[in-house]
Length: 179
Image (cartoon, rainbow, N blue to C red; front, side, top):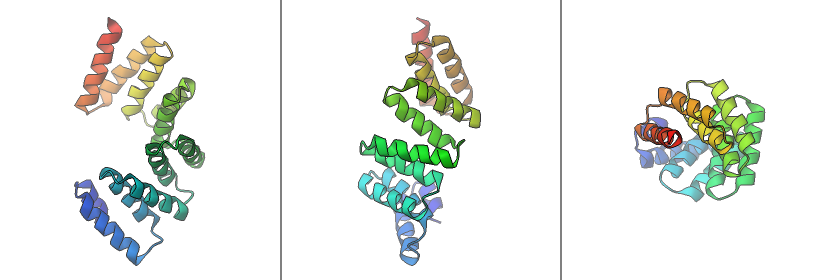
């Protein structure tokens, strides 16, 4: 019920439901993780991090919970902690696309373009239908001076995305790179 409410955009109702679930059973790591996502959607970053930390405390070997906590850590500038969680998530599940994508984004932000390229390439290998890793790999390719590879990745992104805003950004980059 709570996830359905959350997916329907009824975030506050979902939070109430997750709180009721946790009042009945405080060992439900999945409820803490869902609560963390709901808090994040509402901009309650501190509450989101606390819920995410509770989820990982209860299920320390869950790669999704680790990846989600990494994203919460990043919102607070705790990039070393985020990287540790992403590394651990990928040790548990090497082809976990979300963790690969998030670690690649963190590496790119830190200027580790080779590491970012490896992660985005691994995310694409794990799920060739996922559009976002192609976009981020294209930007990484550009940063490495590999413009032709970057263009191919943006073309692949455009074939896979259903997000008009992202598609427009990709078209603008392609026009800029062709000038």
